[in-house]
Length: 482
Ligand SMILES: Cc1ncc(COP(=O)(O)O)c(C=O)c1O
Image 1 (tube, rainbow, N blue to C red):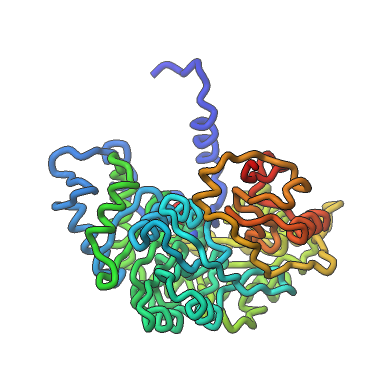
Image 2 (tube, rainbow, N blue to C red):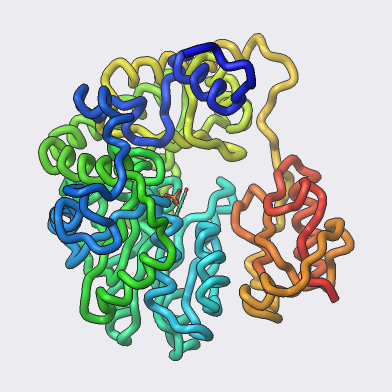
């Protein structure tokens, strides 16, 4: 083929990246293809097919897709499983749209993934928020409590149910068993965002999966922790309180008519891989992770969540997720992430104090050694760096108030929206999801009245070195036009 005259910046950047051999401690869980067989990897382009004879149809599966989904449902302890080609995002949309009618109310944690708000808009569902608990010493949102769920159910007997996050990005798991009982005793639905927990079901020492505790619907991003391609996710259903046909109708509404066979095949592959080897590999992964944590602590004083776990609302922490506190090194998580990247290591994300890394069953001793070497170099390099230091917050006042809801998220979305400077937004109705890191929990959600205290809080966090999220062009808050 002739060299291309017209540039393709994205394609070129991704190809360059592929050659750089940066060691990935981030999703996707296949880690550069390590979880797939040679045959699978060598034929990717040819395997990217469409609904030709023999290939079945995701929207009306009767052949290989139906069989693969059935096998997934058995592995994940569901009655029915559905392949998703647009991540857990589309699963969250589908769960809320299938469970709720327009105008219904649903209990949701305030630190939900943003796909929850898009679902509320699309399905015209009204949120009843629960604030997750917050660890003020470590600037970290944890989980919602059983007591909060009880109160929310007592005070809002008309809700359809609850959407739970289990585990969160940091691997913190909720009191899911107690919450399941509370919710089901009142005849309500339990939906779970298990985006980060697709591996749980494959080892008895991992926290319980939603399928094991009897949730009604749950989503899992296979691509986050299993050998599956980006966007590959599952939606699982336990029939009884919900009906399969409704879920199928909703999925037909929101999924493409040209689903990627590579993504779907990787969902099938990930399930088979984990059923075959998951238990043994997860066992190995947990041992390696334990050793790594001990080494990082003894050599560099780096702590993990296990070291400051005192929260009753967190019943387990995913032992395969590494959340490293870099405060002992005297830098912020953001700075540590940048320095590791310069050394050829990429983590999943950073916050003010921590690095979050995703390890998966296909990481080998080699990757673990590279990670601990990277952390060693990090602590050595820091001595040479000037101007880097951990951001020290003065007394941060982070309120747990939930502002007055003036409109539903859908009404706010369908209003005329204008963008105004942060200070001029007081007294207006928010049309976006606005907050600060820390705490990483939205301060204002769509349809809520923006109050002075909230804005002062956000500005103060920013003054002390935190970052605001949800702003347009980093400056403006979207509000409903008067
Ligand atoms: C807790 C949580 N839920 C849902 C999602 C959406 O998952 P996906 O990227 O597979 O659409 C994410 C993405 O990071 C997430 O962190």
